[in-house]
Length: 442
Image 1 (cartoon, rainbow, N blue to C red):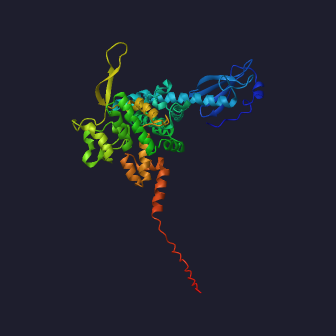
Image 2: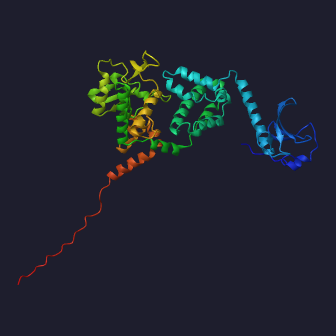
Image 3: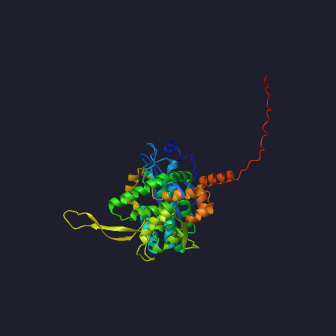
């Protein structure tokens, strides 16, 4: 916020009341081409802002009533300092409008979202997240050229208002929003201000690293809880007629630590039974080109046995994991649901409803999400002493991200490795020899 200007003639109520009523305001320079004026009336005076346009022309605007007779409320009645803030905000809006007009075609946040979704091959999950960016009509219709850091910070904060979503979920939504706006800034760089990328970076900057780390730690599951979840998935699968599909999805997420979007893209040929591994497709996150298309994930034989049932009689190019398709059976009333086929899993939201049933059956906190399998898998690797680079490779991320968000576990693992290298250097103490006492027999 700009520094407030002092004016002995206008800043105090008593000083303003000494002025004679006049239709012509008394102006005070706020810097540049902006002035704040005070127009004295028969009752309370009014604050007026004006900006110089050139050629002895001014644009003026009445801001609000002055706090001559009543206390300021920051809305309809303003103090001298509050009037300065209101005048500067008005001038800032004028500057935005001038900048947008100079750039020609207006590209709004809504336009940026539409372009981003049209260019993505798998836009369903992104559409679910980006709907939050369009939830505020005013923000959705804001031209990108007029977008400010404050706009983005306020939107990001709104995601967490009234516990609307968890910190982890909000971070994923913000990540998609950042990628969307950065893509638009790159595509329309000739029509946007040079500072557009800086605005996006600063507006989405996360200053709650510790809170995020704590959130991740709450999502780390012990092996007993993972078994409970898999057992609950098996029971829900049987009760609801999933035919093993739900159990296989949960087992794959739990055993690989991969993202849902990667697991959903697995093909039958990606399960290499003879090598006891899955060839996991790399994620589509990030803007760089991936060096490999798949990552080899080792599996226990029990996991391979659970998955290979899904490969019987199927071609290698078919999706490995499927889900039932239900419809209302004909009959009186609404009828009952019946399975009429199987299809590939869609976005991560297709697991939302059955996951709630699994959590209830397992008796675990409702805040536990499927992504907890990924957190848990990363931590297991670190605790087992695997190199950070290998843990990052197995989970299709970078060592930098592992160190940033799982730093405590990296430190613990290194500490245990260092302890294992300790050797005893103290000399063996010499045990004193006690001479035997000969007892003479009489």
